[in-house]
Length: 322
Figure 1 (tube, rainbow, N blue to C red):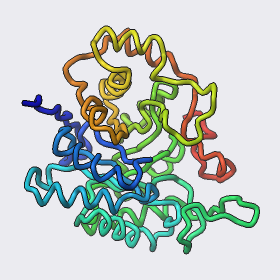
Figure 2: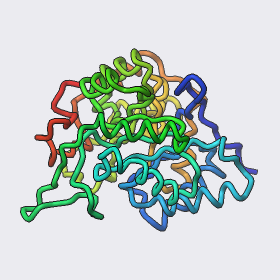
Figure 3: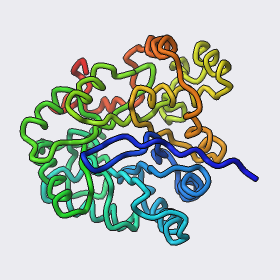
């Protein structure tokens, strides 16, 4: 008889809503794999939090998995926490709600638990291309103000299409500007977060403003398509291996535990059953304060997702210190 799966603890997201500390990420989960991954994560892995996005181009398949899981009666919709993100080609206020409705149709859901602006800058609208380019192959950006985009998300929240709204890849300055004008405050900022980029200052700022940080690429995204020889490898760091051996855990489990112990929600991606299960099996031990400090000391300001092709955009988030 298999052991009962771990269930991630819940932390407060809003006055009346919680979010599971560990979720299943679906970025880079290819069609043909993500259906089984989502189904396994919920039915066998104990997951109740699934992180999606329009740009991942797999929401239809995620939706089939969610539909099958819910129709089985194994879990109820209100037990699941489903996030998706507005892509850059839908930043005008009038395009936000139709974009969310399209995502809901793909996911076969009536509402999301959390909807995020994926990036603070927009791309050319009115095209099917995810990364519209000019003749020189440069990505065509738009000058839509993310404050206008936010008005569209607020409307989605007011009409019940999503229970909560937030942002992704926002720095302190972009967040401050949003907080000053928003009618409904963002409850979440999803950002890249791992020991090479621990985001301590941004986490503190968000915490001081009641914004939950969700960390993506917690393992340093070792399967990223643009990896180069010589790039640092978190899962091979000797001190991570040493800590993992001490607790009889995998290096990945140590990196995920590092985030949750700091109050950061984490969404590791996997399509492998054993890894899906082990990634959430981290709540039977605690790292020491010294171990947390050791892991934080790996900080080198190194990013997996820089999106440098838009680094000249006025809302590009990574030119500021944090």
